[in-house]
Length: 214
Image 1 (cartoon, rainbow, N blue to C red):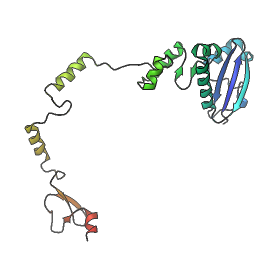
Image 2 (cartoon, one colour):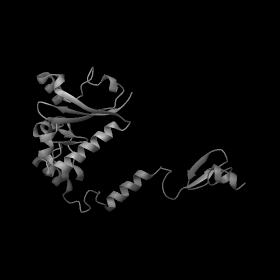
Image 3 (cartoon, rainbow, N blue to C red):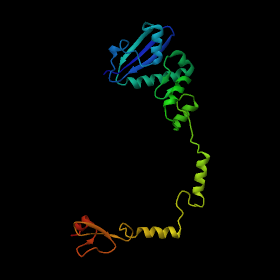
Image 4 (cartoon, helix red, strand yellow):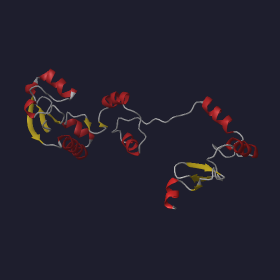
């Protein structure tokens, strides 16, 4: 595995292409032999004009080939602007996530999930992102359901507290030893929670506390 960065020039269209290979099969010796980039556009140009229509300008072996490619593409994009960049480069996307043509954006929208992040919204406004801004709008049926559910409830989503509700809660807690008013008791081996001492051999506290006090 040898990650590498490369730069090519397509003579018929007079455009450059920048790329990198960084996976398990990355090998600069195989570039332009068994591997001719992952770009569909480049491979279409090869089918139309032949491999000899490309001139390999440079191949650089470096561990950060992927990051170097992305950094360089972004720098060129911001220096030239979108229109000039598309005029000079075969690349049609700047990783990660910035797609440059309507066709590529439309294809990506089919696969990508909706993002409502601030960064995504900003890129959408600038027309540089493949995310689409969507907002959930409840149906009329759902609005009616929530409206009926909330009627008479002054505490919003919280349950309305009444004397009847408190009595029901108290009745339900009867027999439950894990309620207020109970204490931990231990006989040095087991712990029990009770309002009164559960046996003559029990002492206040848990097993650890009982050991510390003896």
